[in-house]
Every structure is written in C-alpha cells, then in structure tokens.
Image (cartoon, rainbow, N blue to C red):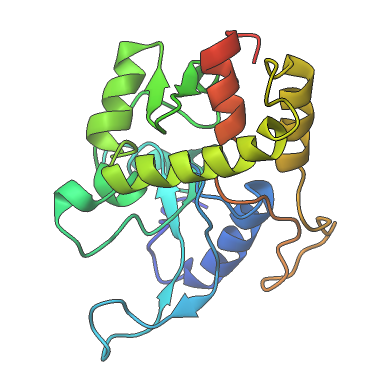
Length: 221
C-alpha cells in the first residue's frame, strides 16, 4: 500500500501476526544470538509501573530510517531478543546494540552463516573480518555473558559423547549425530499457527556444537 509504514497506526494490528510468523520461521530463537524469543508479555525489568514488555523485537536488518522502502519487506524483518534493552550500551546485544547501524552480516544468507564458528571457550568467530566487526562491535555477540553461556552449552552437549569416547578421539560421525539431534525442533510445527500458537521450537543455542565442529573440522560443517 503506498505510504504504508511499519510504525503507522493502521499497521499496528498486523504486528502480532508478524511476530507469530517470525517465531514460526525462526523456531523461537533470536536471529543473532540464538537465545529464546517469545510473543509473551512480561513485567518491565526495571520499571514496575511500565506496561508489560513483549519478549522479542521485530528487527529491520536494513534500518527503517535509511531504507524506508524496505520497512514492510518480509525479507528485511527478523525476530530478535530484547538484547538487554535499558542497560548501558556496552552490555547490550543483538538488535538493541545494533540500533540504526548498517551491518554486512546477514543471518538469512547461508554464505554469511557458513563463515561462522565457535571456539571451545565460546567465542563466536567469522573468517570474514567485516563480519567479525559486526559480531564484536555492532551486535555485541562476544559479550562476556554470551561467551560464557555458549561455553556452558557446548560443554554440556559434548559431555554426552565424551563419556563414550574417553580414551579415543570423538569420531566426526558421532558429532554429526549429536548436531542432528540438537537441531531438531522440540515441538511439531503447525501448518496454520495462530497468534498464540507458533509451532515448533529449537533449543536455545542449538547450533553451538555445529559451529564448534566447523572450527575443528573445517568449512564442510
């Protein structure tokens, strides 16, 4: 519709449906950090008098300010976590940290995602220096809390197979089987989700083992 705007009053009723569709497509994970997102509203974290806060944001990968013609483009919308909104900028992550910044790393582009890996310490890396700058500076994805959370998840998941291979190297086939299990939705997606029924979900940080394996075994992961 000519002149339509994402934040326009006539578009407000549609936002709930957009959140539901993004939750469905992303299996309830943040497009950047892979933490849980939800359409549920919870009390404001710092202001008890404020309205409840929906536990996700609709991120415009290319900002609405710089690219107004793309503000209603489906391929420009992503579901993101709240990214520590309200805290000091150094502790913010994801869309909240990014704000109106332009970034090159697109989580919808398989070629971009294929450059990513994760160290044993939980640090997210890219083979492309431009994407690494986005990860560190614009998205805050190597914030100490996120790095520690990835390490906990990685250690917990790998422990399941390390027990079996205590005295021998872990075969790549065993890691692939573990990744396949971790990246399987915990619920069956519905064909026609309602605003409160978004379908399947993936475990938080489900791809950390895959990213670690890519660091260890190479780009074929």
